[in-house]
Length: 223
Image 1: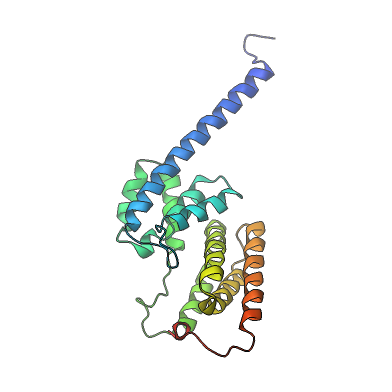
Image 2 (image 1 turned 60 degrees about the horizontal axis):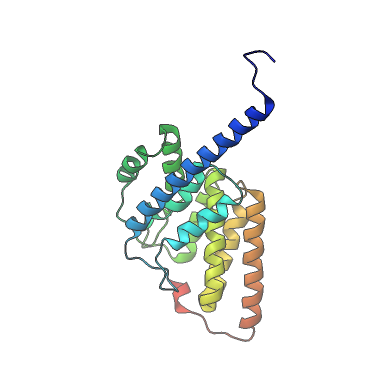
C-alpha cells in the first residue's frame, strides 16, 4: 500500500465519523429551529388539547424524517405555520436562519415555508366562502414544489389523526378537504402521500359509519 493510499477500514471509519458529525450538526440546527418556532407560536395551543402548538410542527417534522433527511425539508416542517400564524416576518425568519444555514439552504427553507403559507384565507378573501377558498388553495398547492407537497402530506396526516379523535362533527368536512388536496397534489413523496390518503380515507369511512342517519350539520363548515 502506497503512502497515498488509505486502508479501506480507515476509509469506512472516517465515513462513519463524518455521518455522525453531520447528524449531530443537523440535530443541533433542528433543535434551534424548534426553539425559535416555539417562541414564535408563543402561548398558542392545539385546538383540541392543551398542548403547546409546537407539538404539531415537531410531529410533522418527525413524519418527514421517516422519508427524508433533507435539512431544508425538516426545517421548513418545523416552521411551516410561522409566517401564517405568528407575527414573525419573512425578513425576521431570514435573519434567524442566516446564523444556522448556508445561503442556498436558508433560501430553500424560506421558499418552502412561503409555499406552505395559505394565501386564500378568510382574512385575505373575506368575500369567499370556505368551499371557494379551499378549492383555490388546493389548486395552488398542486403547483408547489415536491418538497413542499411532502411537508403538506405530513401536515395533513398529523391534523387528520387529531381531528378524527377530537372533532368528528367537523371532521367529515375537514377530511373531505384533505382528500381533495391529496388527490391533486401528486408530486411529493409517493409513500407518504399513500399513507396520508389511507389515513384520511379510513377516517372518512369511520365517520360516515358514525354519521349514518344523522342529518345535523355543524354550522362551522358553512363559514
